Length: 392
Ligand SMILES: [Fe+2]
View 1 (cartoon, helix red, strand yellow):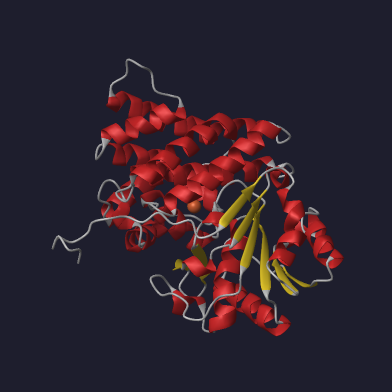
View 2 (cartoon, protein in one colour; view 1 turned 30 degrees about the vertical axis):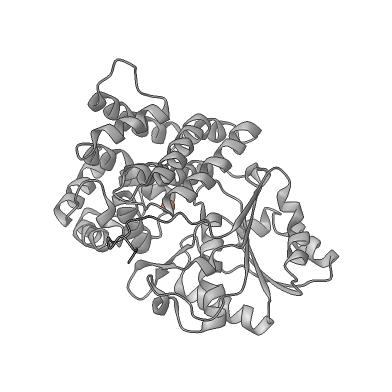
C-alpha cells in the first residue's frame, strides 16, 4: 500500500513485443531470426498459405542463413487443442530455438499456445487464463497475413477444446510475439471473402474495446483511430484487393485494434462468436459480423454517448444528430457494411439451427468477457439477440 495509506488505483497498458510495420518488412524474417540467435526454427502456418506461396520466401531467407527449418502446417481455421499438442511436440523434437508463425489468427494463436507447452508440457486446458507458464516459452516471431485478429500484438491464444466444443483462452505476455513483422504486402492476394470477414473481426475489436466496461483513455485513443482506419478502408479493400492504400489502412487498423482490445477487452459480440466458432467452426470474423449490429444497438442504451462516439469515428454521424440517433446511424451502417462486403446471413451458416440457441446462449454467458459488456447480458438477453439475427 502506498505511503498515503490509500489503495493505489491504476490500469496497465502493455505491449508485449516489438512491432515492425511496413511494405516488405516480412522480407527481413531471416535477419530477425539471426538477430535473435536462432539456429533451428519451426514455422507454423497452414496449407493454404503454403499453396499461396507466402511461406517459401521465409523458408528461403532462413536457408540462406543456414538455419535449420521445420514447417508445421496442420492448423484448422479454428485451431484445435489436438493441433497445439502436435505442434508443441514437433517443436520439442526438432529442438527449435525460435518459432515463426505465418498466417492469420489461426496459425499465430496456435503457435502462441504451442511455444508455452513446448517448454512446460501439459495441454491447452491446463494453461487457461489466468494461469501463466512458469518455464520460459520459446520465442515467437509473428508474420500476419490477414488484417483482422491483431494476434501479432496480443498475448492471448484462443483454442478450440475439442472434447467440450468450446473455445478456451490462454493469456501470458511471454507467449506473445517478441517481434511482429506486419507487412501489408502479404494481404494483397487475400480473397475478398477473407478480407471481409477478417476485417469485420478487426472492426469488432475496435468497437468492443471502446464500448466495453474495461476501456481506458489509452485504449480509447487507439480504438477510435482503428475504427476510422477500418471504416475508410474495409469496403475498398474488399472491392479491389490490389488497392495498396486500402490494404495498408486495414493492416494498420487491425494492429491498432489489437493493441486496444488486448488492454481493454472484447465483450458480448465475441462471447457469441466464440460460442458459435467452438460449436460449428464458423469463421470468427463472420460470426462477429452477424451479431455486431444487434449487440451494438442493445448496448447503446447503457452508454449512449460512447456509442455516438463510435458513429463519429466511423464517419456516419450527422452534426445535428442526437447521441441516440448517431448511435442508430452506426448500427445501420454496420448492417449495410456487412451486406456490402458479402457477409452471409445467420441462416446460411452451415449446421446452425435455432434448437441450439439455448446452448449458444449459455456458452456465451459463461465466456470470461461477458462481464465486460456495456449492458449486462444474461442467457435470456443472448437468446433474444440470436433470435433477432436469425429473423433479420
Ligand atoms: Fe476477434
